[in-house]
Length: 231
View 1: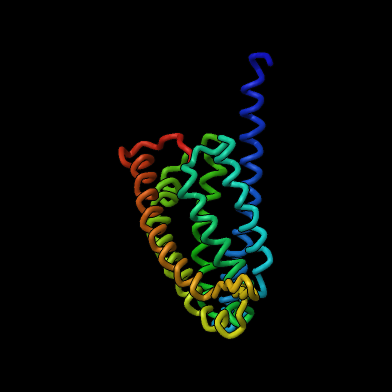
View 2: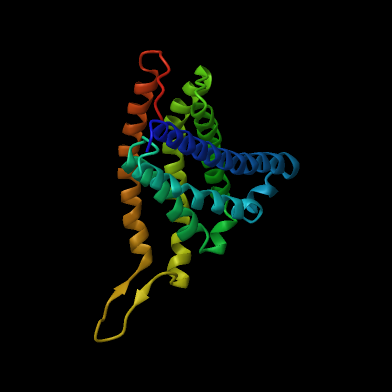
């Protein structure tokens, strides 16, 4: 490999990450705009069918976000692995395991609240990421990116916890994901208990991730300078 190999690799990876951020920005912007327009057009009636109108795009965006774990593992994204892993898995579990599996939960207002919080955070984050890929650090956007998440992330955790709480009666009634093996194994998993234990994990993770968000904000905004550091 010649001296141009590394710059070419960096340019290629930066272009790939820009396209990834652009795709996520388009997806979350569409969801966010759709939710606002529907609410302005239909009022409270739009809340109950939020999942049916935007659920497919939401699931695609969240599945795509799993790539961010790979980005960190192979070193093209300098974010801390564990906080990002927790944030992504929290959403995957709540969206696919809890909401997607229980049709009765999909029509609850809490789903609309949860989607609103997720997409507001992601529209800001992916906008910041796209500009950062091109070397543009717009101070108000940088401040918003590293400040808004500190307020909205704990709210999103509360919304996730409430969605799980609302889903518990349906998991108990229908026995979804509960497993009972016949003799001689005599082994059973009662899924509502798993969800209740996960609530504890969710709040412990929230404390850890919130601390990490404060650290990131201090690193980027603590001195008033915009540092070229990936979020």
